[in-house]
Length: 486
Ligand code: ADP
Ligand code: MG
Image (tube, rainbow, N blue to C red; front, side, top):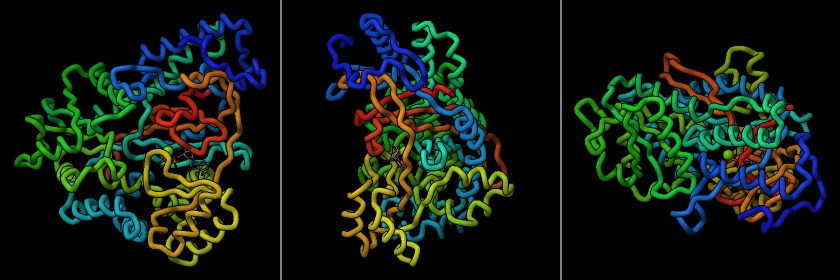
């Protein structure tokens, strides 16, 4: 679709975007740049399968030009990532802490309970493989109410998507800026090797396993629109090590064929698996039946290094995020008061809905001022959060029900609004957006040592300012982006 036959939403007549870049005034020139950008995107993996037609590839909604983000806040987030990696690693290796923090959640939430039961089994049996690989991502937005400091939205410890999209979008933006003859502006785009760094982490875990005939297993859904992001991970493994075999299987296929070898090696269709990389398994619908749960347990019991291990996945739940924000909890895991302060500054108010005095207080706060909060379940993914008046409706029905403890309450963060030029098939033009920054991290280790710990690039998504936090790809409410540091 060319620019000329799409709707150009320019009601406000902006020509200067919030990043300070002026759009070409000639419609024809702008149209050419848009078409070039779309072609570049499709040809370099800023792409997805089209709606209703798995044979057809289209671009992922993206911003034509990168969106402004304060340099100091970006650098703060980058510097925090190894600290957060280590924090989650230590949380994941503290049995009593996980048990105590999740005790009410697992009563109310069957999915977390299923994960927790696997964790308990492995804990009792003793792990065959004590090393875990974490490919984490911490998400932040800027908070207008705290002088535009970044605030943490969540930490993700399983299936952290978009590393390849983010790396490719960074390159797309360099291409577009160059096409527009803004070479001098390239320095404001921070280097992004999110995909390459992620894959270096995966390969490092494979090397630690120490069997050069072994393979890496990608555990995937049968169908995903985000498949190309996953495929690029495979291509990058191949780029970096041509001898390293990758196989993809669904949880159902694994249930059909996986077995354990004499030393509990994970064997799938004749391949010994060194690393299990989950790109599924984080919502209940991805486990069709008990067989898929059994497959998960079998993999946890195996000698393969899991990304993430069951304890890393539990450490990434919203409940743990809420517990970590309580007074004196970070102190259990981080020694330096200065570091604790810098982590805590990125937290906003998080409240338990457990059945105790604090839970009752939180329910009352949310009933009184629902617009100030977000209700979150333990479900990762999109569209699970409850905002505004819907919080009141939900709590009126749930407040005396055990289900309440499956949720946490969080202060709603209001982010600065910026104007960017969005490229979407349905909606194209200048729109009001808020941006969410994700910082990737890699960690490898066991309870006694950390073998690798680093930040590994970033991702920016910009969403319609009015959207209530729904995903960028599935529900078209924004686009993939790059920070333009200011
Ligand atoms: P998940 O990605 O697991 O569904 P998130 O915690 O990332 O859950 O929430 C989804 C989206 O909801 C975020 O990307 C963000 O846009 C929005 N959101 C989440 N928490 C808040 C908050 N405290 N204030 C404002 N928006 C939020
Ligand atoms: Mg999220």
